[in-house]
Length: 125
Image 1 (tube, rainbow, N blue to C red):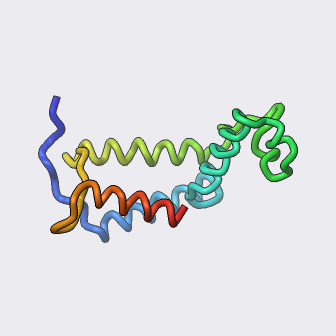
Image 2: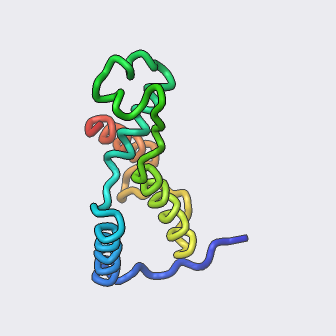
């Protein structure tokens, strides 16, 4: 089964308005807005807990998220980030834009583009 033909992007003003409605809904239903930092923190602490549980127990910040009797996935933000990822995949597929490619400028090889992207990610990380 092939994905549908590529469709045009949404109007950015309509997309921004819809995103604002989602944010408003989040405030009304959950009492606070959208975010992803707590999900990344929980997943990182969970990974550390798998490898070095004594380090998590010894650290006051880490131990509030993981350790004996605590569940890393009990925060709704973890599932929000998972939903954003899956929603992006569904949106790209339904818009006919789900494909594997390396975008690059004129005269830039694929290898150089990947090396520069990796170096930039390393610097930012």
